[in-house]
Length: 117
Image (cartoon, rainbow, N blue to C red; front, side):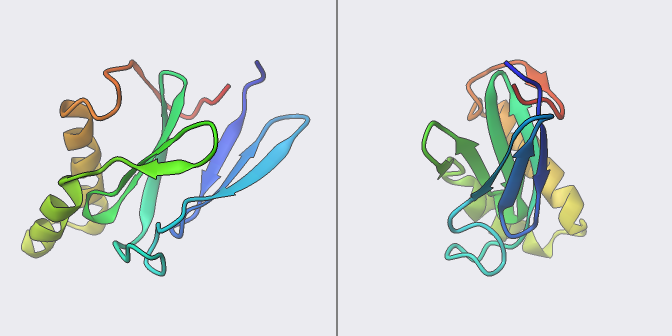
């Protein structure tokens, strides 16, 4: 498998590219203007061989064979409850990713940064 780089916008637009190919995807409902209206998605990571995206208010999405699926369950409610805490949006997003990882929403797989095969 060929290594690839991923780029993410706050509205859930994703580009996956390697030296010979590039593809574009959209996370339905993600972003401030998305149907879920939970704010920006801010991070994309590969865990094991699966891509995950997280963002404001505890949004977490997992990429499968055909699309991106929200797997955040109760995290978005916790994220909205954290609105009045004295953290920046980035700190809340990082905290939500850590919570999702601790809750094993991400299949208890090893964590790898910025690699997609």
